[in-house]
Image (tube, rainbow, N blue to C red; front, top):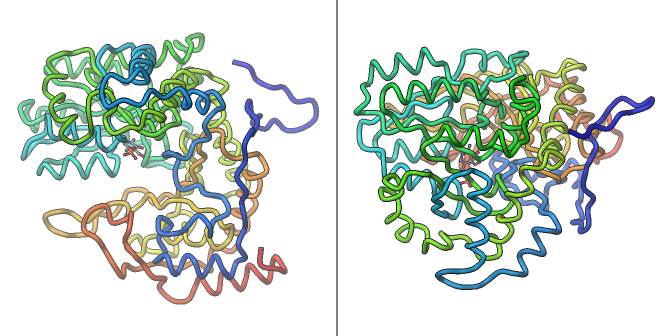
Length: 483
Ligand SMILES: Cc1ncc(COP(=O)(O)O)c(C=O)c1O
């Protein structure tokens, strides 16, 4: 890998791309930020981009596309069936994953829908390293449950453990013994684990999971939304693969799975998704669902322009200069914050910078949503939109309707690929340091409108007390003006 050496300056992540097209940003004054977040029901999903300075909600569909992707979009072959754009995408998918069959879908959760419909039945249990919100919702929709078997180390937010996304093999064996193989439609591995701070899975762990799956005749499914970044971490942190290319590592990973699925809003910096496998019998179980729910087999709900962009994007996602930018930017912010005492998830993972809201706001009880409150405070302070990844992101228990308190209360500031500059990162660091110094001003939240499924998307909350006003007043006092 090419790394830039510095003479006197402390090393910083260097962008191996330049903006050839730009979008103007604005930073609304603090009064407007406060007004906007209260009007949005203290839910960052309900903000408008016109109210936001840096949108760090997600990397989903927000990655900067390359000039190569844009130029490929002009070659789109518009056809319902047999489009040449799809032929190009199929070749690219085969090369990327080393798997033969590809069922296109319109986004990641659509792949989860197909998998749930095809394999999961009432009463089933799906063992996985960790759930993702839409994955769990699709499995529970079939009256089945997920079982999270991630290593305990992940719940220690400040850690040096390189692979906190790993499955605990002993827990997996115990679950299979307890539940019985007939109730397990597949084992699911998410690489990297989104909700625990974008933490990677090692190849050694994937091999161990494969061994258990083989022993019990179970299928192994990989959620590959962040497989390229996971491969990059494997190269950095697992000595056996230090000299492998990202393409080779991705093949090693995909080889271990019966089925791989992905969201192209993340992987490939386009929009769309897909399910890949080498097994014709598995294709047969899913195939009929594609035209029913997604679209014909040669577009699956994607536009031909997105298909072209994805075909190119997948090629770019094996380039270390493209893939390393996000994790290196995250590491820069995480390590700087950690050095100044701000509680962050370490080691730095993929996807974004994760703050530990339980440590940041010990005064806010779990049932008053510390991560949700911190996301609100960050928006007021910086105009940065992050995402709550804690109890609000857990729906209530579908049977008892009890609150499921999250093991970790995280706020994620996603750093989409190739999007933000170093000055944006420095601004984020500065505002978070100010907020940490003023953390005692922040209070909790309560629901005022609570949907029963995926409530974090459009639920509305209100502050408990008038802490947002106090925070605004302190901001104005310290900064002397309202930006
Ligand atoms: C791990 C993981 N799986 C599945 C999905 C769902 O993908 P989509 O948003 O394209 O439906 C996401 C999206 O963030 C994800 O991170």
